Image (tube, rainbow, N blue to C red):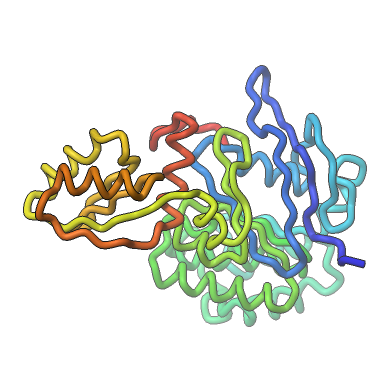
Length: 311
């Protein structure tokens, strides 16, 4: 008999007035899996997460989180979940240690002082425990927020855009920490705008305009998109970009230094367009990226980078 998934929900729907923000979304995340939730602003990622952790009730749909029915037993789910929001939500005028002590009391931990001490040590915060949270850099605020989210030993960790505004080193260290905890059995669902972060997940779920359009391991999602990619090198990148962008065989053109990253769905038609519009240019096949797939789905949905801001 297969083990119960940490998250197993079907056809979740959430409406705000006459706007359907989450439209029949189904998710399955296995225990110990890191699952990425990617999509543009306004796609429904945060709303879905809030339904999973019991902060919002779905208007339709069913399923379980950590074995608890999300509609009938939402209050039983909450103590077993850690939720790290996008915005830093701890107290700026309290120290790191004071913030964690406050969180420990909120969770009713039997020995809050010991829990705080162990969490400070575990997350590398001991030497900063007396520092005011408001004076921390983005990376250290992130580490404190993670500490507050895991100190009660949750079985499921929900991370909503956790690395926004932090430097690359802090992002790398954060993901190392997440992978270590997943290896110990913690299940993680993380929403992100960074494609390199999504590629660090065991699986991804791509949501656009409230609908789940693709899911599975990154390699499979890219393969199933049917996109093909060419790298074009020429003397006048700007002119080549304008010419290729106007061809119906070309879906995406993006400059990378002195080269163009050209994407389409029909390899033969794409090659013919490049030969016709960029004679003499060097052309080589390249791997389609997750970012290419992401942009492909956004454009099919009629969205741009200025998509609606309701999340």
